[in-house]
Amino acid sequence: MRGVVFSSEVSLPARQGHRVTPPRARRGFLRRVRRLIPSEQKRAIKLAAIRDCGRRCVYCAAPLDYAHATLDHVYPLAKGGAHTPGNVVAACPSCNRLKADLLPVEFFLRYPWAGSNFIHYARAVHRALKRQARRAVSLAFADARAA
Image (cartoon, rainbow, N blue to C red; front, side):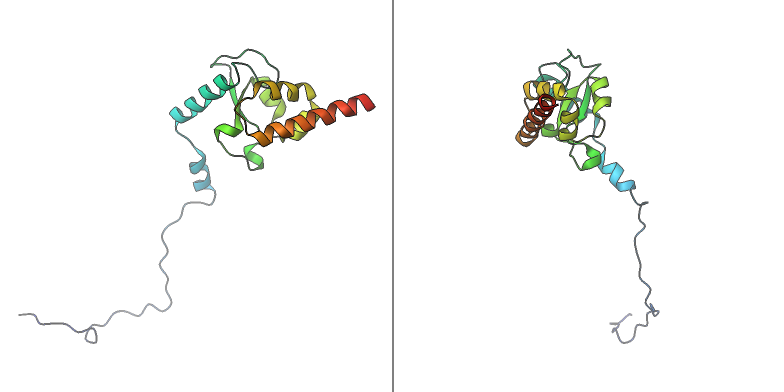
């Protein structure tokens, strides 16, 4: 019959400063996985962006259908923007490539026509982004008159 075993009677091997760490994924791997969104959610965001922009490209005002439309992040992901409905608009592929990873102010200063269309067609964008577009367009047109 077994009796009670006291902790003073049990001998455990010495750990000698050994620290157990769980296995980790490669650096940056988890960041990429977190950015992925399910295809249904991306489809819903794209449909909502097309609807909110009146089925037109927010930069050149060309008519868009679902197959041709691309999602553009007004404040780019590369510069810290988020993949949220207030930052995503529908754009044609050529305008999306033209904008690339430029900040809204930089893009609208270079192409004021895109900024004026953006103010008109981008209805569901964050208020601060529209305010930046208005300022950039007015500055660009003022520079054009002065030159």
